[in-house]
Image (cartoon, rainbow, N blue to C red):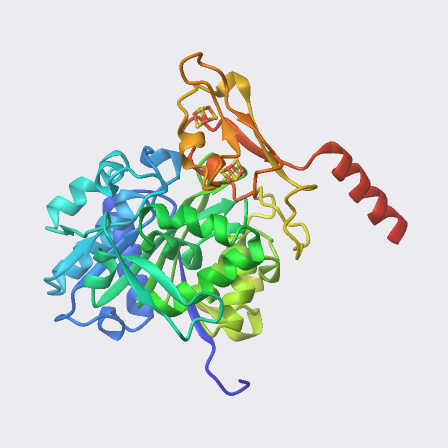
Length: 392
Ligand code: SF4
Ligand code: SF4
């Protein structure tokens, strides 16, 4: 392991969502990695896989920004790549292309003649070599492609702390099977093991993270946009996510997707194994933090808990004043007998049954009103403080 080359993560400073500026930044970044042909070939059918979690305007920082999506589409077309498609399986049953329309990606897709991949139908893929999961239902659009370029967004995540390159591949899993995956692998560790296997299976060739305007706080759907002013590009999704962690002063080892994806051989998560390539030369992860980082970025930096924090720990809560009683959270809840209920006719606010709730936070991800917050109950917080102060 000592003699294996370090994983390269390109970091390009890019403070604005301007078509030309983002294109120039992306082109520079990909050239620093050896050019597109180091990753994808001109005779391949290439899938662009943005983050299309749910319908949201670009400025909400929920989805991959259209300028980043446009920049890679333009670069591929200019360099003679002719067989391009795009798509993602959103968190709800909504067609990805309605989400792409709302997220501003559709005009770029039309401008560069990107075909819509089939993300409504799944294909069961046996995966006997999987360590945690032996088969997946993968969207047909993914199966149809020869190569994937993963266009992830820099965001926080209630279950696994951050969502980046590794987590973004979950949109390759078809429709309701994503909810079933949450129900089957409800805690952060097991969910991350499943994601690590998924990354071994779908293995995108290149990962591009839109970290120009990131999301902090109540992510991945209800947090606050905050500028991080960077594009990160790498063939190693774990190294890329680790650089993201460094930039926000989060120990990469406290992110279970990094930990298990490294164990499963997807990539490298330790700073000694990563070099950050910038226009001004190669720097370390620590130097990248000093130059481009934000120590105040609002993200959960607490210790990883092995157990499902479920019954005692963090819980989703509805902020009544923000709730419009749309029922999306109830529909999305993957628990068979529903851990959320509401009387739609009477127009009541959904109620949680915390005994049934598996703490997957799908409801929080998909609420369009940012009305669901994930909180640690006061007693648990107080007891946690007591335990810590005894240890001193
Ligand atoms: S999804 Fe959000 S707004 Fe809609 S009912 Fe649930 S909490 Fe209320
Ligand atoms: S109520 Fe929310 S957090 Fe609980 S199981 Fe349902 S979707 Fe997951």
